[in-house]
Image (cartoon, rainbow, N blue to C red; front, side, top):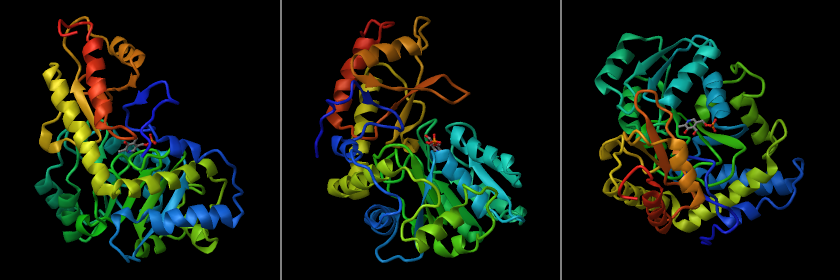
Length: 375
Ligand SMILES: Cc1ncc(COP(=O)(O)O)c(C=O)c1O
């Protein structure tokens, strides 16, 4: 795999859009006709029917995939708006920005919902979830964020899935920032709907998202969507009957780049190998930052390999913008914090990023600590 970052002025240590490989970027250098089989059959269907089967067991025909224009939020909104029947009710597990966003989507779409809030960076209370599901029989669906990107936390999807299945409800998983980089098995986790996007752990470029869903659940959703364009059922019907045809203009170049990114995921050794690389990146980052005096927000048992939040230094001279600028000058772009309870900054360890990049970053961080004697 080409490791060059020469075409970019700096490495993106962000949760996506992230640093991509030169071959992914090169894959966008030709044009495609959205009516032609070269694109619909040769690119879209190959993605849908072959390459996206990362969470499925071999030969599992019960799960189907739908590609959807827009950023990740569009796709989460499409799923919530399509999956919930008129008489449905959603329970949202929330412990950060993206859990709150699902609740906001339900509110805007006028979908009855309850929020199980466990606090930023704290896992859901599973005993409370069990009693909530027992007490409120109106709840038809539960939504959980797999990797809560605002804190870097990995939520216990398998345990949540077991409780949701025990209660006979449907499970929606926002796996935006984890899918392709953290193993997740549909069966083991009891997933019914999974949402992710092109520019996260598959390492493509932004422009669309995708939904993996149990065919039986999707087939029951005809005419349910609260939006014309964000109708997962209708998009799926068109892709099935039109052999890869999208209903409305598709982001052709981005989709072609995504196919290249999926090929590279397989070449790397699949999700397990990618997960191992991200975990090595994260471990190096965490250990190196601890040695420099930074304090991670989360204990290791909840920490994902995707992105790490660090407490902002308490020194009165510390300013995120200054720290950021000094890192950027040295070839690294990091991310501000986004949670409300604690000032943080975040560093992503996903994308076309390797342990040697993390080691170089740690040298740059040392050089950027203008407020500290360690610099
Ligand atoms: C877990 C999660 N859900 C949803 C989103 C929203 O995706 P987008 O910003 O592409 O709309 C993100 C974005 O980072 C995310 O990490």
